[in-house]
Length: 315
Image 1: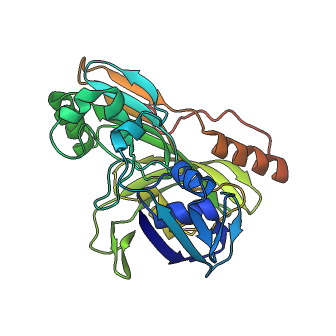
Image 2: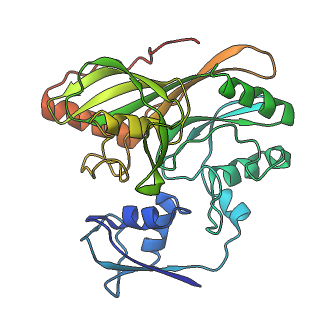
């Protein structure tokens, strides 16, 4: 058994604090540990995942011995949007790491895909058929290759910036102008290498956004198209212009509206390696973001509008 101890860095839900501390765990895995009585707060077991814990509280987690990750992966749902002999398009659930983190064993999206599609595990490298990535708490469309040739073809599209990547985000505050382009280079934060920041000599990064709905002065629903794919790009760009993503625990502030960053990879366009055909794949809004949008609409008297993914359509 492995024991992890830490002091809560902020007042927040217990499951969120545990999942943030143990990057190898998904939110659902953190909830399971809590419900199984493996988490103590101030020396007392706590079994309610949604219970609020004050900043500074001592949290102890009793982790089980090395788990059989491949067997556990079969219990993780996998929502396949498209599959052919060369490519998989997945609707990733929030709270699930995309790839393993060294020294912190946990079921990841790669484990989950390999459990259903063993050929993905035969593609060279620890990240198997992974072509790009999404942050753990970001939901939505992600592509996997099922062959070496498909991996090379898809990676070439990403490198040449030939793909279409459209996200939905709920951002803090009144977003003005209602349509814009953010051109700000990104790199490691000089004050914290685990974070990213706008830095003078960083990698070029470009994001385009438009406001779909404005909820008073509390928040806005944005459609964001990224023209580059830097780590944490949308999260850092929106923070840099004064509108961090709602409930972003790293670059923003906790919100009662949603328990994770309100960011969803809604649409992905690419050329299929099998045929060369241009296809666009869309992931429906997950329940937590849809519920946050409905609550914001109701509280601010905003009439619902069809959320058509229109930023840039095509290549």
